[in-house]
Length: 373
Image (cartoon, rainbow, N blue to C red; front, side):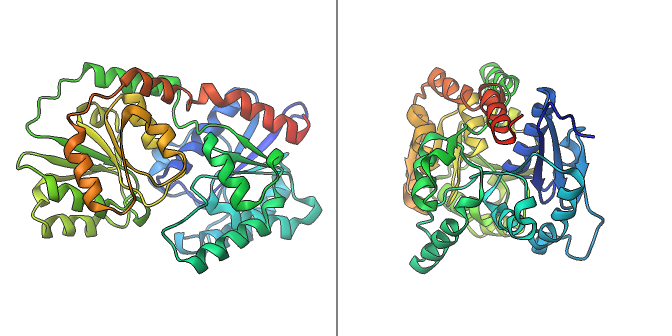
């Protein structure tokens, strides 16, 4: 039975497939429970590489069905979530990703006045210049069509708030900024300590990329750029798993750098951040990428595509920005970055603003206000 003195927060996830949003929800749920909130997770299916990292918190999972797969995961959640909501009776529904907006809209339609207050966190940029004009207009129309259904919309960094208000035409008082809590303070300390203690004695330069091996991250661009500037002893390491693994390996082979590309899989990034000479973000679009916050905490020089309004603020004096999908600019920046002197103290100070500890009070206040508890 829910405690009437504390809000019951139901976080919604499709699965435990590895990604920044999934890690955020697992981290948030554990932390919010530690702070006295009754936070739980409605999970579409119990599968994915994050099973090993899943905290001991309450999960509500429907029985498996033929639609419980990645291709139809939103439809599956739309069908199953109403029964979970009626069973749990949460004070607040929390959707941590743009990818769950269709599910949120469906809950409002299916439950009507019985739908609990909903909070949406925008996880990726809403302005998508890489898509066609028609698709952009249709996307903006959909955003504006249901922006009013949320009690609050959370921007993960200050520049994203203006974008949300503009693209969704959301009332300014509805949009609040809570920085992306991608790390704990201990995570940040461990990344910094490992890099400070490391002796980078490998031959050649080592470039590091991290993320799901999926089209959004555009690791093909990173491989192409690396091939243009690679010296015989240089290495490119990409951490993560996903559907593009075989295609990336084939691309590297075709460019003659197959033996210089390392794909360790889904592993802890701490030692890799410690040993690399530069971190490279090659994405087509992002929100406030957790890997960039990790790079700041480590204090490693950064090359990043300017793929979201948050990126310039985050990189600051810690690296170089290049246009998205520009292989020549990315290659040139990678070729020069290892000679740059990054402002490590300033980078780590920025990372400290994106920790669980730095953002917890705002989340607590938001949920108590919305639930009136």
